[in-house]
Length: 230
Length: 173
Image 1 (cartoon, helix red, strand yellow):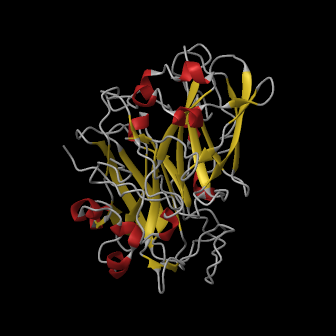
Image 2 (cartoon, rainbow over the protein chains, first blue to last red):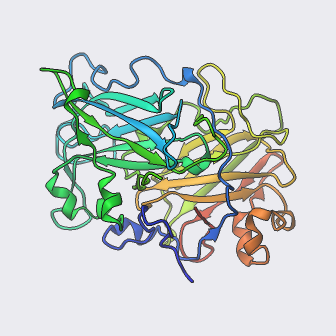
Image 3 (cartoon, each protein chain N blue to C red):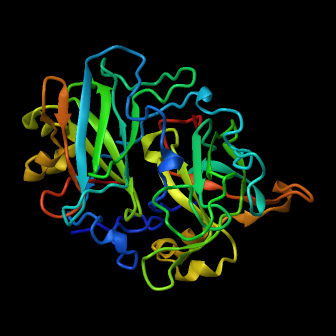
């Protein structure tokens, strides 16, 4: 069987025509099955000193506060068996409030914000918890199809504590009308799995009169080689 | 069992978000033979993929998984590079130990909704074919796509083709 679609119902297929960039990049030959647990080896290990103070606060990079709606973002990194993934690297990147990335390739005609680079990183604690302070990203057009605009999103990179847990995903916001017409979000075949990429408003995560709070829990593959979640 | 979070593409604008200082100069907690692994990534039309992230993970020179971590260094044994305009990447690392020297590779890019995983062998093709990891394709011509070519005393060359003729072997996971 020429199955390049992947057997895991929670992940998107490689080939998904509505997302045009997949057309020349999705492999067409059959994928080779790995022996069980081939990727379940502890590592790589990120030293605590890799993270510097302030790396998880995207609002303190400039001379003054960035434009946009300030938000506290917190969540928990778990594995599929419900165990916390501890002391593990979480990296995020995002557009600014106008929908523009601090990136030379982004030529969208929206202003850059000199006080916002849109990059953060942190480590989960012993309960698998992480938190960031940032601003709500804007939507922006892309060239996939007429009137293609990405829903507001924050990119997440999770190193996990074994290669089997490595994941890069995107976090979306509740109630965004662009979700229905976004091929990247809708590339995930299972509607329930799609919803797991949407954060939820959580007032207690925020700060009264200062910032709204959102929670986004992330579930990685189970790893038998890291019984303590480290 | 909790429902897993789906994968999504890194998109085109990740460079500031994922670039690490010295990400392509791989650190270890032991000494060994310094080598370079260099190559290019191409798409199904033969065009260079200039917006990919390539990550590597390997055994240390003594043949054990690098487990230590010190100070503020990058994780031992782990590399991360983004590709250049011509699709090129270049890692400075140490020759992996173990019976069949190899490096595990993960590729992310725009147009990949999920990472691609593969393995490059720094060993003769005949030895690579004996790796139990690829037992299901041990007799296939496609094993050639996983074998790096010596390009000097301490340099190995390995190109990746995401799709089409000479398509690199990728793993299901």
